[in-house]
Length: 160
Ligand code: SF4
Ligand code: SF4
Image (cartoon, rainbow, N blue to C red; front, side):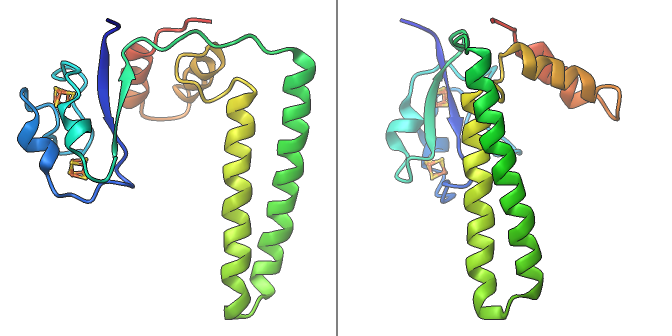
């Protein structure tokens, strides 16, 4: 069977610690809240025990990114750019809005950001093992502290 490990979504976690009790290796008990990849043996006990469904089992080695046609990527970028323009307009409206209307504009901005994330993912970006993500991380190394970036680059083997 393909090797896998647990991943905890902290936004869903209700901090009841059930995963800590069932984990046989202590991988679920970390100061950062993230599951310790090196200790996790992929048994899945934490995911089965989690009442909030905050834990997902992921393959250790991600599948290769699918090849996208340039026209498809271009079209996705164009829609994403439109969404960015919409966000700019919504931010302008938000500044003028009454307290009652602010929630609506904030929700629209958030919704547009989620759509942009999906579009970029669909266009082949944001996949941790993809070549373009690797290039993006490499570019960040020029701009500041590199410890976390180096750790990410160490763990993410490009496979496309
Ligand atoms: S999959 Fe198993 S070893 Fe890994 S964190 Fe969950 S319970 Fe612990
Ligand atoms: S069992 Fe689920 S909800 Fe509870 S602490 Fe673990 S991840 Fe969070």
